[in-house]
Length: 539
Ligand code: 5GP
Ligand code: MN
Image: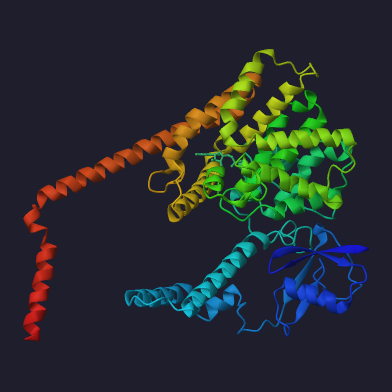
């Protein structure tokens, strides 16, 4: 059956619909209605990228992610359970009050040793569902509101009325996407993009999409592998959709890893040393390396016996999944950036991507680093038969990129550490809640910012980065030096925290000496005298 694809955003969320070419108007409206979670009497409005209202009819033109339509529900029923966030706030709907009331009710029932009535469970479920929905909406609107206009006329890429996020940004011209295919990004930005000091926090997701396209273009992949720009856009759009909105392993992390890989390729002049198909493998592996990460690591997957652990028999469940999702995207013709490659080339690239993504499992760290150390003395780029050597280098490069945040300027790296710890602590909390073994570096009661970094930098980052800099001495200044500085910074922070802890312990000890235990204080006496007074008053 002939079909057409329609891309649109609804409530700031990107959607993709596949319809028969002769889809009746009513079916089309029903489809939009369900995508918008609208009620039968709500009015739906569809806008084209120019912001003009268009008809929801069988003649609706198919489009692509860079020219997506925008669907709006105009007359949403206020009494519906699908209240918007603002509406909920405006109406004074307060979740915490509601939840507290329910908890109180439940406690009362439990105290009377009566079985909790089903209606209370039902109410709890409804409150949870509603809260989840609102949270998802808030997250989606935060992420997507900035990028919903990707390529559309209201796109932030073209919005020069927004004040700059920081002064750094003024140094670089914003990228502008004039049409679906032509990329206008200034030469300054293109050069900045090749450096480890690139600040991801200054760029919106929509701009990041453009920057990723720039990387494919400037490495000549578009021309060399005959990648159609629309296919690249489809691919990146699918990738964007399949990163979750979680604190660390999100789309911005995907971008940072890819951007570091891109920087490493340029800084080491890898273009002149290895085949371009290997470079394409490396960049695409970086783009895909954490697809659909849920925020819980392999240890959790295995201990909690999740679906992923079951599917992959506890063997790198996450990395296997990231790679499988990547090839799910590449299986679709419209998002297969490798569709013009020969069968042999595709086979080689698939094998390479799988190996690179699987190499990001940190339990393989020592094995991969040891292998790299053994081949370093005989490393010879001219020896093209050294397939094994090249793949090991590729694995090292993706590993370096994956854990390279500390090689970035402190103002870029430190917020990433906050994100990582947030995700770690979430997992630690969940492990405690579910009675699973608590991953030591994820326990919020034991791990601090400096304690999580000093060991990691000393024993994981430095040994890895130093080996790579042995092969490429120019990397010493670009990535080894900043990591050394980060180690100093966190060592100092650790000492300061320790001093602070000791000071507080001393203060506490001297306070308890000042007021002997018998006088536990004036406060006790005060409480007693207040009670005495009130007793007298009552008499
Ligand atoms: P990823 O999960 O991103 O593919 O693999 C990298 C892993 O290395 C992360 O999950 C995390 O456990 C660890 N890692 C990366 N960067 C840092 C860092 O800056 N500090 C610490 N403590 N761990 C890191
Ligand atoms: Mn990663």
